[in-house]
Image (cartoon, rainbow, N blue to C red):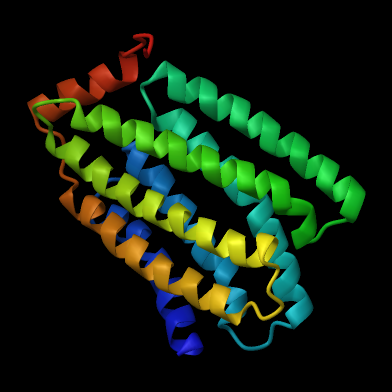
Length: 226
Protein backbone atom coordinates (compact mmCIF):
# COMPACT_ATOMS: atom_id res chain seq x y z
CA UNK A 1 0.00 0.00 0.00
CA UNK A 2 2.84 2.39 0.86
CA UNK A 3 4.48 1.77 -2.51
CA UNK A 4 1.22 2.25 -4.41
CA UNK A 5 0.32 5.57 -2.79
CA UNK A 6 3.87 6.93 -3.08
CA UNK A 7 3.91 6.31 -6.83
CA UNK A 8 0.37 7.65 -7.22
CA UNK A 9 1.34 10.84 -5.36
CA UNK A 10 4.43 11.44 -7.51
CA UNK A 11 2.38 11.00 -10.69
CA UNK A 12 -0.36 13.27 -9.34
CA UNK A 13 2.12 16.07 -8.65
CA UNK A 14 2.84 16.38 -12.37
CA UNK A 15 -0.83 16.52 -13.45
CA UNK A 16 -1.19 20.31 -12.91
CA UNK A 17 1.83 20.99 -15.14
CA UNK A 18 0.47 18.65 -17.79
CA UNK A 19 -2.90 20.41 -17.71
CA UNK A 20 -1.27 23.84 -17.93
CA UNK A 21 0.57 22.75 -21.06
CA UNK A 22 -2.47 21.08 -22.60
CA UNK A 23 -4.79 24.00 -21.80
CA UNK A 24 -2.17 26.52 -22.98
CA UNK A 25 -2.31 28.28 -19.61
CA UNK A 26 1.43 28.90 -19.35
CA UNK A 27 1.05 32.65 -19.85
CA UNK A 28 -1.21 32.96 -16.84
CA UNK A 29 1.15 33.46 -13.86
CA UNK A 30 -1.30 32.04 -11.30
CA UNK A 31 -1.71 28.69 -13.01
CA UNK A 32 1.91 28.55 -14.16
CA UNK A 33 3.41 29.15 -10.71
CA UNK A 34 1.20 26.62 -8.94
CA UNK A 35 1.92 24.03 -11.63
CA UNK A 36 5.66 24.58 -11.20
CA UNK A 37 5.35 24.41 -7.42
CA UNK A 38 3.64 21.03 -7.46
CA UNK A 39 5.85 19.59 -10.20
CA UNK A 40 8.93 20.45 -8.12
CA UNK A 41 7.30 18.54 -5.27
CA UNK A 42 6.95 15.61 -7.64
CA UNK A 43 10.64 15.73 -8.58
CA UNK A 44 11.69 15.83 -4.91
CA UNK A 45 9.49 12.85 -4.11
CA UNK A 46 10.93 10.82 -6.99
CA UNK A 47 13.85 9.78 -4.77
CA UNK A 48 11.39 7.77 -2.66
CA UNK A 49 9.99 5.75 -5.57
CA UNK A 50 12.87 5.45 -8.03
CA UNK A 51 15.28 2.62 -7.17
CA UNK A 52 18.95 3.47 -6.69
CA UNK A 53 18.75 6.36 -4.24
CA UNK A 54 20.16 5.67 -0.79
CA UNK A 55 18.31 6.48 2.41
CA UNK A 56 20.84 9.23 3.10
CA UNK A 57 20.10 10.92 -0.23
CA UNK A 58 16.36 10.58 0.35
CA UNK A 59 16.76 12.09 3.82
CA UNK A 60 18.79 15.08 2.60
CA UNK A 61 16.40 15.75 -0.29
CA UNK A 62 13.50 15.65 2.18
CA UNK A 63 15.22 18.15 4.47
CA UNK A 64 15.96 20.57 1.62
CA UNK A 65 12.41 20.20 0.30
CA UNK A 66 10.91 21.00 3.70
CA UNK A 67 13.27 23.95 4.07
CA UNK A 68 12.40 25.52 0.71
CA UNK A 69 8.74 24.53 0.41
CA UNK A 70 7.28 27.18 2.73
CA UNK A 71 9.24 30.20 1.35
CA UNK A 72 8.38 29.07 -2.19
CA UNK A 73 4.62 28.82 -1.63
CA UNK A 74 4.61 32.07 0.36
CA UNK A 75 6.34 33.74 -2.56
CA UNK A 76 3.70 32.39 -4.94
CA UNK A 77 0.90 33.65 -2.73
CA UNK A 78 2.58 37.06 -2.64
CA UNK A 79 2.92 37.20 -6.43
CA UNK A 80 -0.59 35.98 -7.23
CA UNK A 81 -2.75 37.82 -4.71
CA UNK A 82 -4.35 41.23 -5.28
CA UNK A 83 -4.90 41.91 -1.57
CA UNK A 84 -2.41 44.10 0.24
CA UNK A 85 -2.96 42.40 3.61
CA UNK A 86 -2.08 38.98 2.16
CA UNK A 87 1.03 40.47 0.55
CA UNK A 88 2.15 41.97 3.86
CA UNK A 89 1.44 38.71 5.70
CA UNK A 90 3.37 36.71 3.11
CA UNK A 91 6.37 39.05 3.39
CA UNK A 92 6.42 38.97 7.19
CA UNK A 93 5.89 35.20 7.31
CA UNK A 94 8.69 34.55 4.82
CA UNK A 95 11.11 36.66 6.81
CA UNK A 96 10.14 34.92 10.06
CA UNK A 97 10.43 31.44 8.52
CA UNK A 98 13.89 32.20 7.11
CA UNK A 99 15.13 33.60 10.43
CA UNK A 100 13.81 30.58 12.36
CA UNK A 101 15.34 28.22 9.77
CA UNK A 102 18.77 29.84 10.08
CA UNK A 103 18.61 29.68 13.88
CA UNK A 104 17.52 26.04 13.79
CA UNK A 105 20.24 25.02 11.32
CA UNK A 106 22.95 26.84 13.29
CA UNK A 107 21.77 25.19 16.51
CA UNK A 108 20.98 21.64 15.34
CA UNK A 109 22.56 21.29 11.90
CA UNK A 110 20.79 20.56 8.63
CA UNK A 111 18.15 18.02 9.67
CA UNK A 112 14.42 17.63 10.28
CA UNK A 113 14.67 18.80 13.90
CA UNK A 114 16.11 22.16 12.86
CA UNK A 115 12.95 22.86 10.84
CA UNK A 116 10.47 22.20 13.63
CA UNK A 117 9.53 25.82 14.36
CA UNK A 118 9.82 27.34 10.86
CA UNK A 119 7.61 24.56 9.49
CA UNK A 120 4.99 25.12 12.17
CA UNK A 121 4.90 28.87 11.58
CA UNK A 122 4.95 28.45 7.79
CA UNK A 123 2.13 25.91 7.62
CA UNK A 124 -0.06 28.08 9.86
CA UNK A 125 0.69 31.16 7.73
CA UNK A 126 -0.15 29.41 4.45
CA UNK A 127 -3.44 28.07 5.81
CA UNK A 128 -4.44 31.51 7.12
CA UNK A 129 -3.60 33.31 3.87
CA UNK A 130 -5.38 30.80 1.65
CA UNK A 131 -8.38 30.96 4.00
CA UNK A 132 -8.38 34.75 3.54
CA UNK A 133 -8.49 34.34 -0.23
CA UNK A 134 -11.38 31.89 0.03
CA UNK A 135 -13.32 34.19 2.38
CA UNK A 136 -12.88 37.14 0.02
CA UNK A 137 -14.11 34.95 -2.84
CA UNK A 138 -17.23 33.98 -0.88
CA UNK A 139 -18.02 37.63 -0.17
CA UNK A 140 -18.60 38.28 -3.87
CA UNK A 141 -21.99 37.60 -5.41
CA UNK A 142 -20.80 36.88 -8.94
CA UNK A 143 -17.66 35.03 -9.96
CA UNK A 144 -15.83 34.63 -13.25
CA UNK A 145 -14.66 31.27 -14.56
CA UNK A 146 -11.10 32.17 -13.63
CA UNK A 147 -12.07 32.97 -10.05
CA UNK A 148 -13.90 29.65 -9.72
CA UNK A 149 -10.86 27.84 -11.10
CA UNK A 150 -8.60 29.60 -8.60
CA UNK A 151 -10.79 28.49 -5.71
CA UNK A 152 -10.37 24.83 -6.64
CA UNK A 153 -6.61 25.31 -6.59
CA UNK A 154 -6.81 27.09 -3.25
CA UNK A 155 -9.04 24.30 -1.92
CA UNK A 156 -6.48 21.69 -2.96
CA UNK A 157 -3.68 23.71 -1.36
CA UNK A 158 -5.48 24.27 1.94
CA UNK A 159 -6.43 20.57 2.11
CA UNK A 160 -2.80 19.61 1.57
CA UNK A 161 -1.52 21.98 4.24
CA UNK A 162 -4.26 21.06 6.70
CA UNK A 163 -3.03 17.48 6.38
CA UNK A 164 0.50 18.74 7.05
CA UNK A 165 -0.79 19.82 10.47
CA UNK A 166 -1.63 16.19 11.28
CA UNK A 167 1.77 15.02 10.03
CA UNK A 168 3.47 17.80 11.98
CA UNK A 169 1.79 16.65 15.19
CA UNK A 170 2.93 13.06 14.66
CA UNK A 171 6.52 14.00 13.75
CA UNK A 172 7.29 16.94 16.03
CA UNK A 173 4.86 16.87 18.97
CA UNK A 174 4.14 13.17 19.54
CA UNK A 175 7.61 12.37 18.09
CA UNK A 176 6.71 8.93 16.80
CA UNK A 177 9.74 6.95 15.68
CA UNK A 178 7.90 5.06 12.93
CA UNK A 179 7.26 7.64 10.21
CA UNK A 180 5.64 5.19 7.79
CA UNK A 181 2.13 6.24 8.83
CA UNK A 182 3.05 9.89 8.34
CA UNK A 183 4.31 9.19 4.84
CA UNK A 184 1.16 7.23 3.96
CA UNK A 185 -1.01 10.12 5.15
CA UNK A 186 1.16 12.54 3.20
CA UNK A 187 0.92 10.56 -0.04
CA UNK A 188 -2.83 9.97 0.23
CA UNK A 189 -3.49 13.65 1.00
CA UNK A 190 -1.29 14.65 -1.93
CA UNK A 191 -3.34 12.53 -4.34
CA UNK A 192 -6.60 14.02 -3.04
CA UNK A 193 -5.21 17.57 -3.10
CA UNK A 194 -4.00 17.17 -6.68
CA UNK A 195 -7.40 15.82 -7.71
CA UNK A 196 -9.12 18.89 -6.24
CA UNK A 197 -6.61 21.33 -7.72
CA UNK A 198 -6.75 19.63 -11.12
CA UNK A 199 -10.44 20.53 -11.33
CA UNK A 200 -9.36 24.16 -11.25
CA UNK A 201 -6.73 23.65 -13.94
CA UNK A 202 -9.33 21.89 -16.09
CA UNK A 203 -11.64 24.90 -15.78
CA UNK A 204 -9.03 27.20 -17.29
CA UNK A 205 -9.98 28.72 -20.60
CA UNK A 206 -8.56 31.51 -22.66
CA UNK A 207 -9.95 34.61 -21.06
CA UNK A 208 -13.09 35.99 -22.56
CA UNK A 209 -13.63 39.73 -22.44
CA UNK A 210 -15.21 39.58 -18.98
CA UNK A 211 -12.49 37.38 -17.53
CA UNK A 212 -9.83 39.61 -19.09
CA UNK A 213 -11.32 42.64 -17.38
CA UNK A 214 -11.50 40.73 -14.09
CA UNK A 215 -7.88 39.63 -14.42
CA UNK A 216 -6.75 43.19 -15.08
CA UNK A 217 -8.72 44.37 -12.06
CA UNK A 218 -7.06 41.74 -9.90
CA UNK A 219 -3.61 42.93 -10.94
CA UNK A 220 -4.34 46.60 -10.28
CA UNK A 221 -6.46 46.27 -7.14
CA UNK A 222 -4.58 48.07 -4.39
CA UNK A 223 -7.46 48.61 -1.98
CA UNK A 224 -6.52 48.37 1.67
CA UNK A 225 -7.99 45.27 3.29
CA UNK A 226 -10.03 45.75 6.42
